[in-house]
Image 1 (cartoon, rainbow, N blue to C red):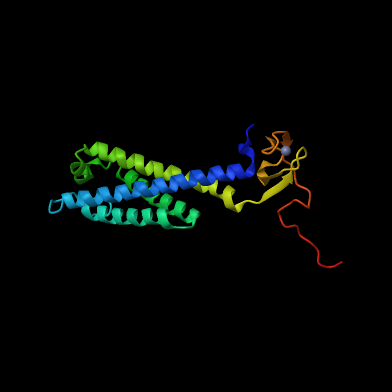
Image 2 (image 1 turned 180 degrees about the vertical axis):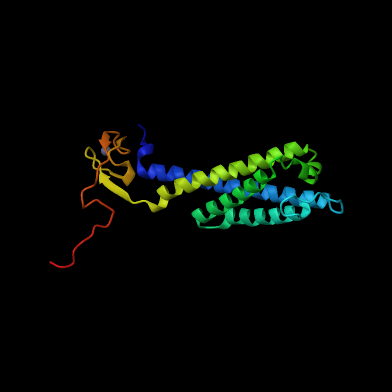
Length: 207
Ligand SMILES: [Zn+2]
């Protein structure tokens, strides 16, 4: 067992994963927005198929989608609430998938302007969108699941029985065997003694 069971190590790794995902999501959304804007410019003046669900020309849908993607990418880069970002990314991706699945026979017939603007086939354009929004859906779900461990859960602090070094871990890690990050001795994570606990204890005010 490596030191990754150590609470702070885990917290650090989780924070890194979430930060990586959020930045990559921001870049991806910016790219998607740009691609849709370019497709709209390139196909300006051409008659476009109307979408089957909102009954508007695909061009309108691309404007709406690119605006949403632009706003989301800005939130990814500059927002400060991690859970809010993951929720927004998830909702945007889920929205795409609900819309996509509602079509049944595929979106490729409606992606002509996007495909033409970048010289790919409509099926390739559809596949790229699917991969992008699948990544956003899975990434935001995972970040959401990782996040509560990162900031919302109580953590405990004990001193290593061998070297006295302090170890911080989550409550759910109680009874796990770990290697002490300080001296590498194998120790069991146990409920800490009162003096070292960082969880506030209920204390009685009256004598
Ligand atoms: Zn130790």
